[in-house]
Image (cartoon, rainbow, N blue to C red; front, side):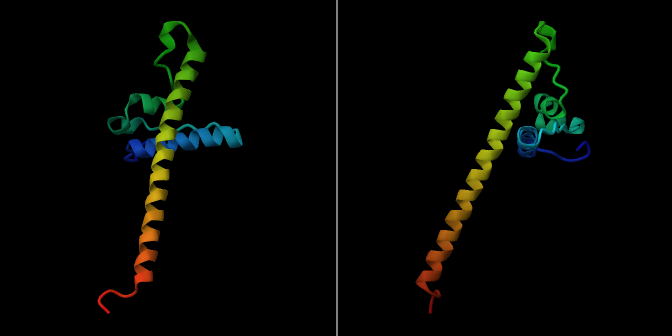
Length: 109
């Protein structure tokens, strides 16, 4: 993922994949997004890569670091799921509109 142009939406989708892989398949996914910091931010980059060291200096160590990463990954994944729901609703409305137009018959005829 280093040479990709990831935006925040793509990072959110990756976060959802990280959590899904861990929760359902017990697989720990990490992504090297180090060349995408301008687009997705340092915190998101660290959460996706598993290199979450931002909070290590306060003396709480590993537990706090993992908890902060978990919170951020869940927030990112939730944003992704919200977008998927919105897309599904838009597809449903478009289908309903097409069906209504088809039921009215050909235009101008």
